[in-house]
Length: 494
Image (cartoon, rainbow, N blue to C red; front, side):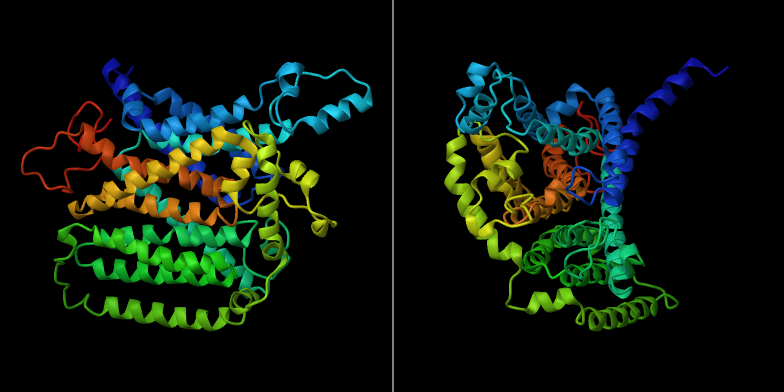
């Protein structure tokens, strides 16, 4: 029989690592199975139950200190879930009929000769419930991530890079195979371009571009005799990711790739001083960086010659536009025209498809339909009304304030600051991408955004609660975990 003290210690050990294991398992699942924004893909049968279990694990070990340290991202996620839930609460007929924009539904009930029932705010309740279940995935990641230590966050960053590279490699397989049907998990695309593990080529490009700051982070932390090899490897893999992103033919990807590379320099510049003064390599190791670099450069050149022959690359250089590009501005103008008719509460979370069909211009009528506005900011405002607009304004100002603070503290050389900068850059990339698309409606990129929000808030949490010993280096080997909420040393565990 084991002593009671050992059992207690084992329980504390398991509880402190359960959120990390749960978050890692969920992230692995969403990167492999969560590449579609559709509500009927088989992968959701795994992702959503796993998200509920992960959320339960996170809530079980959640403490008051976790709330105090990460109050803003947690409150924002709670407000988002609360707004979606509010749109699903049935209202009495008199109150529901008083909401603007419900005249057509009321007239349909009267024409059918039925009594007006209790209805929720959203005009398409089943899609509203789908939005609620979908939001549980990033919520689960967020609740677990606020409880993790620094080394665990660094491990999750490597997991993200692994997911991005896996999707990039699969995109290369699709291209090399001549876009064989068996390489596409969500059906053949309209254009022969790589999708990777995503259903949409633009979302693959968004994931790969968003990974660039993390490559800069890993390279900047390299030290010791193998530092040059690590840096060369990160540069080669980042270049590979950029090439695959360009093969998708995404014009947004091309523009944001340039921005992502430039912004990633902020992460590299924030490296600690000890990585600059590197140890001298031995004579037997001196040839390795050059051989590794030559092999990587040769591979990239050969692959660059291959992708220049792809349909996506030709589309990237062409001046023509497809159906989405042709009608995108018409869709936006249409939404801006009719969205005020549904204020202050909006048409309801998840109602875009059906509501847009009511207002769709004659020149867009056909056999296909628009599943999203290709501008998530505009779609969220249309569906959620003034409360949703208020949440977006708060998010933008909070992001700007934290990003400025991170840049101002970038000289400290702390890994928390670098993670925060990487998170800020990734959120900016995904937010800018959402002006012309809907990347964060996929479980994979929504989970990535939730984790980045925690990274942005982590340096503030550390500086607020940590008490560092005098003369201790900002990023010494002793400082392994995030600071304990009780003000204990950063090296202590939860």
